[in-house]
Every structure is written in C-alpha cells, then in structure tokens.
Image (cartoon, rainbow, N blue to C red; front, side, top):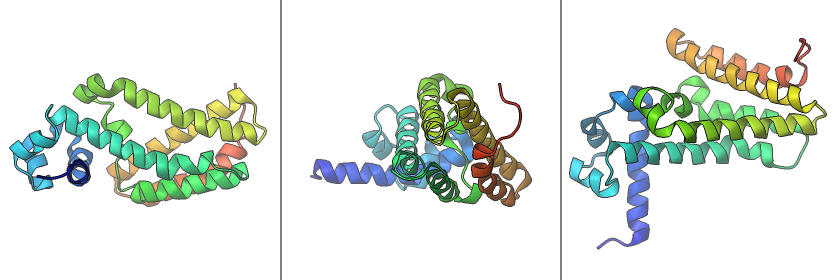
Length: 194
C-alpha cells in the first residue's frame, strides 16, 4: 500500500500531465477521456486521485499552475533589490513561464463559461495579487499609488493581449516584444494618466 507521500507524488505527476489538456481545450472542451489518455490513468484511477471529477482536476491544475506562477513570476517582485531589476526579473520569468508565448494563461482559461462559474473568485483573487504586487514595486520606485496601479493593470493587459495575439497570429515575436517593452512602459509612461 502506498504511503501518503507516494500518493501525493502520484497525484502531482497526474496533475502535470493534465495541464496541457486544459491548456489546449479549456475547461468545457476537456473530457474525462482526454484526461485519462493524457495522464495514462484509467477513469477509475483519476477518480481515486480526484473524487469530485473534472472540477477537482481543473482546480488542482489551477492551483498547481498558480503555485508555479507565484514561485517563478511573483517571487522576484517580493525580493530585495532595485525596483527596475525586480521588474526585469519578473519579465524574464514571464518569458520562461509562458514559454515565450506558447503557453495559454490559466487565468484566461478559467475565466470562460462553466469554468468562470466555478473559479471566478479564485481567478479574480490571483489577478488582484499580481496587480497589487506589481503596483507595490512601482510605488517603491517613487510612482504615485494611483498611477502605479493603473500601470500595473496596463502591463497585465499588455501581457494577456500578447498571449492572445500569439495564439491567433502564430507569431511568438509579439509576446517577446511585449515583455521586452514592459519595464520601459512601467517606468517611463509619459502619457497623461488619471
């Protein structure tokens, strides 16, 4: 009989195998058959790991990806150092996390249709953490709080928009350019801001 640690590792391996399915087909387009095939587990085994079915699997994937995002993308913003250097570190992490635009954002995936009904509050909370964390770094750099928040929102719009365009136009340079331009736009935004 497997130990709790072995079961946990087995569940984590299953979660990692489920990520590409949800990324490609979204919540509503993903079926248990697809998840079973991707994980290499029978449907019964999947239910053993995730008794509440697809909803629990999607939640586990969402939590896992969120944890990776926190550890890779947000962590540089929480560390010590110059604000610009921390933003640049976040940008490098974004390129890695999204594989230069090849990975769809899970916040977007979980904000449509049935998934939105199930995960709306979690998506909103994670997005707000990202906005607030980025704004705090800009405030440390001497940017007025309202402007810092507005710039943070604009930055995330730029990132999300680039991810959508990459997917539609199949041009990964769009994401690369958006991320490269991000620090300059955050720190040198000379447009009129309200």
